[in-house]
Image (cartoon, rainbow, N blue to C red; front, side, top):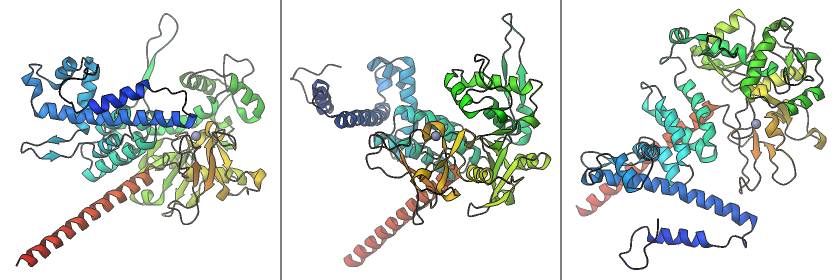
Length: 496
Ligand SMILES: [Zn+2]
């Protein structure tokens, strides 16, 4: 878009365009690295805020019936013609404005956006259209019978997450929330799941390959995940690598496996395929599966006693899945998964089939308590994590559980004293989450260096926090309302 050449009436966007033009022509060579990062953040924030301005303009154009006045008919076609947008882009903008814009009812009164927390985050410039689309996609899957308070809490959690997290992770956070919004399977009950279950192995094609599709029940998933985590681990059972350890890794040398993992270029789907192949190869039976990262390959289920008492809610597996509680209890009855039950304070009550090895117990307790990588935003489940000593053993840190947490290999490597390194601390008794491991990001990610914990594996606590905030907000509104009434009374008394 070209700016007008001086003459003509002043437009509301003129100052914006001249600021952008000045920035466009500014020499960047004199800026420090910090200033460049700062400028990139500023440009991104401005672009995000502009997306919110775009919603307001779409609402206004629609309220004024510009599409019908211009003969374009629909808002989408109006955008396509006026702004020369593609069909897909115009459609996405209309969808975004529909859920994030402040529209008006028949009487002309403003109606709260359908996704108010998301709209607020975008108006602040904290989240991108990509984040907002991810949140809208999750909220579309919320069952229709969900209570309003839960709907708003879920949206609040997603928007809060999006303010600091990646759009790529919103779907996973959403899955965790949806599993808890509908824990008793009112939307999808066990009968529905049993009806949906199936593995279809299609006709073998001329090239010898067979397509597979289907739906796994939570129970099969919970049993399959640990096997895939072990046999399909990078470096294991790699047919492209003659030195890759095969089958049971009980006897596998750690260094040999680490070297094989570095050579491993298979996709996750290929590794899953090779894990199933290894599982079905005659000399590997599930009984002989041995250990994975010091624990037997088995399903580890974590549940809270409150959920057991209600016989509702979900159990969490070490591989990051969820199993509806009734099914988890059935699984625990007929096989012997490792079962961890937590009391109301989150302390372990029951440690099923305990091994004597203290390290194994500690790892189990960590899996149950921490559930996955402790770095904020990381969704690696416990099965992909190693035990991390918060105060390094070399620096006098004890080997007790208070000083231990879980970190996946990738995040573990990010902790160092060099530039760009992360730090970890255990939160003190006065913190909101005492005993939890908080991570301190390097200054280019978080200039304030605030210790932050990972909520990814504890969606329940995000839900609790969001509900508390919503209640606090309601209380505040009530207090303001009360104060306003008092003032009104006062002034009417004064007038009398
Ligand atoms: Zn991680």
